[in-house]
Image (cartoon, rainbow, N blue to C red; front, side, top):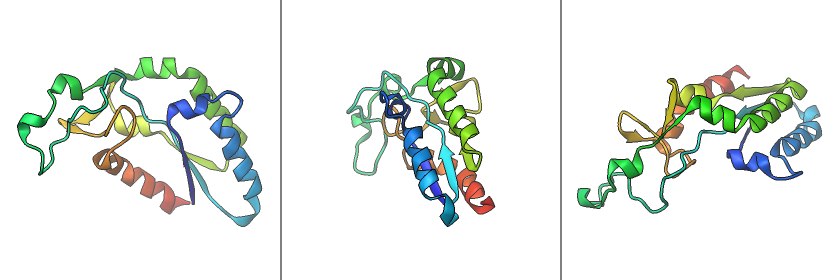
Length: 151
């Protein structure tokens, strides 16, 4: 099983879309029985400052943790979809052109409500503006495992 994934900005490279690379790879490996899964981009949370210390650790005193307004962010799902419609269309076209590729929509798993949040029950799911941390990745593990086992 081969799993494809990329941050939303990677799809914007002029003339060098990741989906083109994925299609080429699929064509080149079509005769060896590989299975493919595309994982959707996760939402990003602009406004988070690099270097803010938001995660409590055993070695970090509580006074060193940034305040919640700097750490806990949310973005409207409808606004995120609207601002990334070009990329979503590109992904949909890729999936239509490659029907053997399975698709995991991370937003439906990570953002069950109207807003995508970078936290769940006040526990952070992202280590920065767009990378899942261990906790966030574990929220996707059951979905990913189900896909892999069904292939």
